Every structure is written in C-alpha cells, then in structure tokens.
Length: 114
Length: 113
Image (tube, rainbow over all chains, first blue to last red; front, side, top):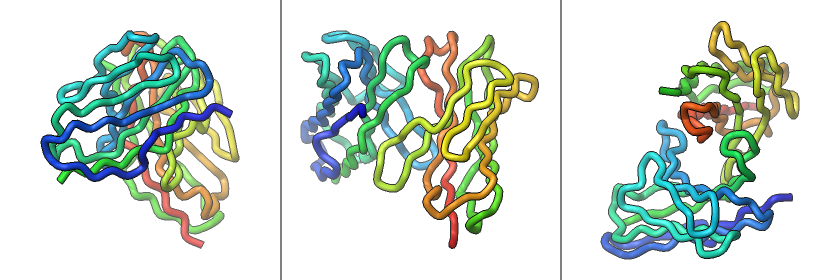
C-alpha cells in the first residue's frame, strides 16, 4: 500500500515563527502536493511538485514556500506564521499525469498559530 | 473556469437509509470525476471515479454515474452504516485546469444507529 507520512499530526506555533511541515511518500511518485483544508472551503492547493527541485504555485501560495530535494520528500515552509494560517494541512502524492491517477493523502497536520 | 458544487451538510441519516449526496460541475470538454472520502482523523482516500460520460464508478456499496447532460455525479448508497460517517468530497479533473483536481467543499455525513 502507498503510504504518505506527515511528520507531525498536531503543532502549536507562535505568530512569526518559521514552521516546517514534512512529508514523505514511499511509492516513488513523481507528483507531490500540499493542500490546506478549512471547513466549508474544501481543499485548496498551496503548491505542487512534479519532480525533484521542481515546484509550481497552486491557488493559495502566499505566505508559503516548499522544498523538494529528494523525490520522496516534500516540505512545506511557513516563513513567518500568522494566525490565519491556522488550519489542517494535507500532503499527497500521485503518479503522473495530474488528475488521471489516484492521489494518495497523508493523515494531515493540524497547525494552530497563536 | 471549472468548478464543483456539492450539497451542503451535514447530512444526517439513520442506519440502513438510502443516501444521495449531490454533486454538479461546470467544465468544458470531458473531465474526469471523482469522489474522495475522509474518515474522522484521517486523510482523504479515493472512493470511486468515472472518466467518461455514462460511466458508473462503484466501491464499497457506493455508486455514482457520470451524467454529462445534467453535469452531475451524485453519490448514492442503498443502505448506509454507522461506519460510513465521514466527509465526502466531489472533484473533477480536466484539461482546462491543467488536470489539477478541482474540489467541492465537502459534505459531512452522519449516520445514527
């Protein structure tokens, strides 16, 4: 079975802190994604990556950056956390092409910024 | 642009009731359509999909038929169980979105014993 592992399930950070969310997948998938999930808004794509060191902005990239130095690992970085970034963050991976193959999700990371 | 509209929740049903969760979409061309499910405390997982008009996706007793004439992909199950309580997301993928998934807002389903 495909496994997407997010390093932290629950985090509490202070405003202005730099936050790292780590994600690892074990199925050699080229595509990796970071989504944000908020009630009533569904999933919103923050960034995605289709190869090592390659990244593309999603719908809501402001305030976030990403890093993909190895194929299996995709990190989301909040440069200076703010309270409006309190949310559930979901990492996912898939084989190419986009949208044609099943996307596999991690269990999510609940981030609270105080 | 492409969009997905789901019925608002929560939807509350008794065990063994018939379930319909409505999903309609706006898209040009021939998108692929998906239902994902998120059980409490977990990430999302693919429930079923359909890639062309009149296709029926099915899994775990759930079904959805890709209706191009009504631009719909409603999720149905004949007899729900308490274990079906979850949030259900409808999504589409098409060439206009560069094949990225466009997500509905999600519908929370609560099944009471």
